[in-house]
Length: 86
Image (cartoon, rainbow, N blue to C red; front, side):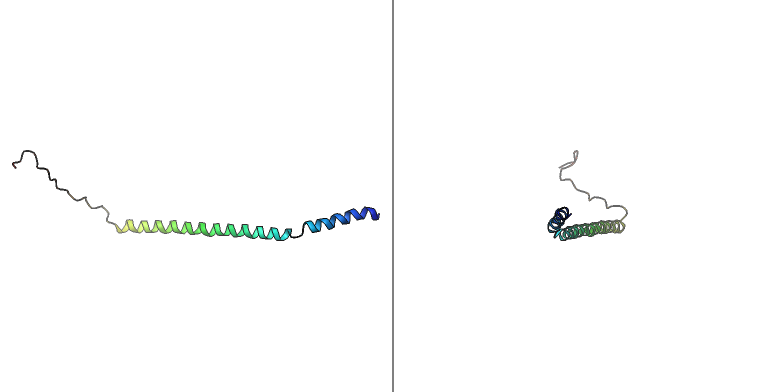
């Protein structure tokens, strides 16, 4: 009976030394992934706010402008008209 227990005890001893620190690794990975997702969420929110603000400013500018754009200025030609005396 003792011979059967010995390999089982040795296996658990090896497992405990092999698994040592694995929880710390999972905590570090989980913290990194959570932080990365949080940064993406905050950055995405800022993009949405910036787009909304740009649309509001464009709407305000459209309301402030006259309803009809001004006519382009007339240009005078320097060429003499045909049929006129010079």
